Structure formats: structure tokens, C-alpha cells
Image (cartoon, rainbow, N blue to C red):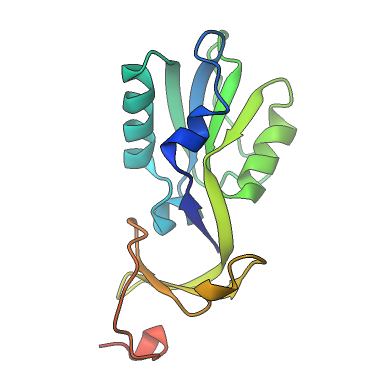
Length: 160
């Protein structure tokens, strides 16, 4: 699984045209949701914030795995011309291939590969990408992306 962090709201807005973009949001139910940078709640919050500032957000869809080719069943509103991706870069790339006629806006940054302990709802970064080497071994809570402290350097399966 890929661990992602949400981009700052202002950085997402920089890629949007308030006058011309008609937006849908497509979110991933897998990695981004577990990492806390996506999921239905984050999609709703982003849509509400954009709408409150005058952006034309038509709707949103949650997809089981955005990175899986040919997974899209959503019939987009005919007026939509912009998709905000609440997924990792693999999911955003798949959106670009599947919806090449739309402007695709990424809303997350890939940090690296992660493993999860579903019993303890912990994420651990096991193979950080270039530029994120300091993330190696860091642990985060499921669904929020909040960093865990005091793991005493133990693997996630040994943390009490």
C-alpha cells in the first residue's frame, strides 16, 4: 500500500479556476482513506470548503481502488471538466488515462510504501520514497494520518 499525505488546501486551490472549472471529486477507498488523506469524510470536507468559496463542485464518488485500470463506473455529470483526485499518484495516473479529456488535480503527496496492523489500526512507513527518507519507520493512526509517538523503536506488531 502507498502512504500519502494530503496537500495543503491552498496548494489544491492553486490548480483550480473558480470561473471555469466544474468539479467532481473521485476518492480512493483503500490507501488514501486508510492513510487519512482521503476517504468519504475528507471528500465531503473538501467539497464543502470549495463550495463555500464559490467553486462549482457538482459531486463526488468513492471508488474501491482508483489505481485499478477500468474500475470506473461513474457516469460523470456532462458539465464536469475537472476531477480532483483523492488518491495516490498511481490512482491519479489512472484517472488521467481513463478521463484524458478532463483536467486532473492531485490532492495528495506520495510518501512511500506502508504496512498496516489492522488490529491496532497502525500504519508504518517501511519504504519511503526519495525526499521522504526521514519517514522510515514512522507510524500513523488509521484514517487520520496522525503520527504516533513513543513506539520505542519497536516494530508495530510489538507496540503495546
